[in-house]
Image (cartoon, helix red, strand yellow):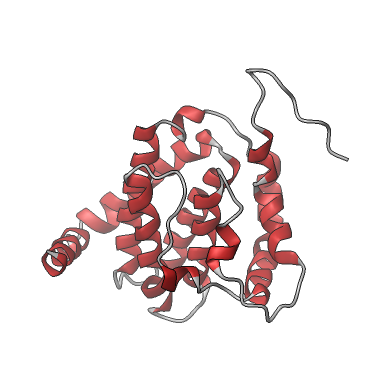
Length: 217
C-alpha cells in the first residue's frame, strides 16, 4: 500500500508519480488485445505527463523492423509534439485525424513486454527532480526545439538510425513522464550531439528543413 502523499511547500506533487512509468504500464496491461486505443482517449485525463505519454506512443513505429515505416509515421508526430512544446503549450493538442488513431492494446502490450525489465529498473532510478529543466517556459521550449530537430532527423532516410533515435526519444518520454530534470539535462546534451553529428555535419537536416519551409510557405 502506498503511503499518503506528503504535504507542504517542499513536497513533490503526487500526481507526477501517479502518472509515471507504473501508470503507463498499467494503462496498457489489461483489456482486449484487439482493442484500438485512440490517442485522444489515452491523453484526455492526463495532466503533467500528457506530452510524455504522447511521445511514448508516437515512437512505437520506430521499433518495428520495417524499413522506412518508423520515420514516416513517428517523425511527423514527434515534430508535432516538439512544435507544441516549443510554443510553450502545456497540454498536447491533437488534430481530429490523429486523435482518432492509435495503437492496438496488444501492440503496446508486446512492446512494453520487450522493455519491461529496463522500464522497471529505470523506475527505481528516476524521480521528480531538477524542475528547472522541465517547468520554466524556456526549458520547455528548448526541449520542444530538440524534439522538432530529432523528428526531422527521424523522418530522413538515414540508414540504421531508427532504433538510435527511437531510444533517444524514449528517454525524452521517460523524463517527461517522471518529471526527471536530471534525465532531461542528459537528453539535451545527447540530442545536441546527435543533431550535430547526423544532421548539420551531413547537411541533410538543413536541406530538409529548407525544403519543408519552401513547401509550406
